[in-house]
Amino acid sequence: MAFQASHRFARISPRKARLVMNLIKGRDVDDALTVLRFNKQRSAVLISKVVRSAVANAGEKEANTNTLYVSRAYADPGPVVKRFQPKDRGKAYEIKKRTSHLVVELGERDKLGR
Image (cartoon, rainbow, N blue to C red; front, top):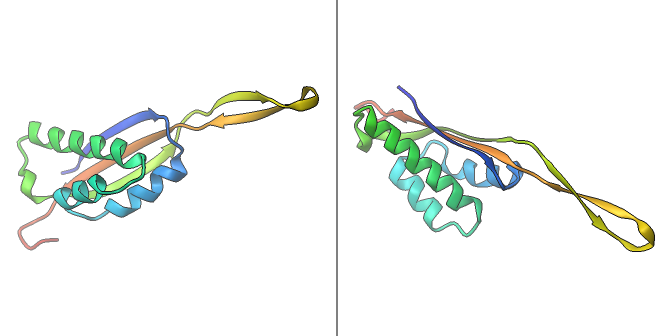
């Protein structure tokens, strides 16, 4: 059974979040949280909160939290907030403030470790 948690409209670009998401795919939950704790990227803090939320969701369903692993982790693009930066001679350059939807799904390993 899969346990899911998400953070929608996170103020980080999906490209930056995917770099950290790829680090934790397939890892045990404890190992994934350790990797996120020592990662220096800003998205690691946001993703670790999502992983902890998914573990809490699994605890609500009375699942064995010792056998959980990150089965899926992905960052989809959210809406883009567009702003303008004034430049010389009356020009204006567009600034795109990207958002993303961070989703983490946890699965349970069976007794054989699969």
